[in-house]
Image (tube, rainbow, N blue to C red; front, side, top):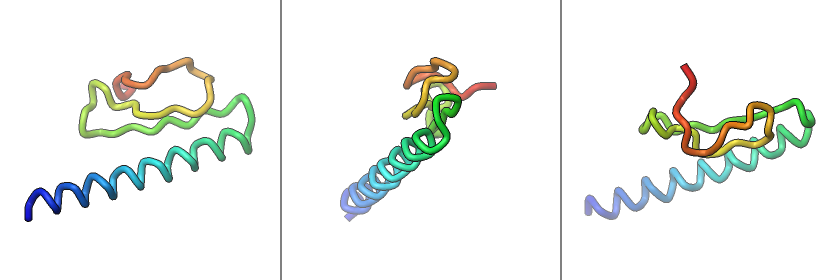
Length: 67
C-alpha cells in the first residue's frame, strides 16, 4: 500500500517536472536569447538545479541553489 502511494507520488512529481520543463522552454523561446529559466528541486540543495532553459549564466544541471 505504501509503495503504491510512493509510486503515485513519483509519477505525479515526474508529470509536474515535465510540464515545468515545457513551460521553461516556451518562456525562453518567447523572450529570446537573453532569457534563462532554471528549475530547482529543493529536496537536495547541493544539487538542486534539475533543468535549465537558455544559456545566460552557463550554469549546468546538478549545481546547487545560488546563495
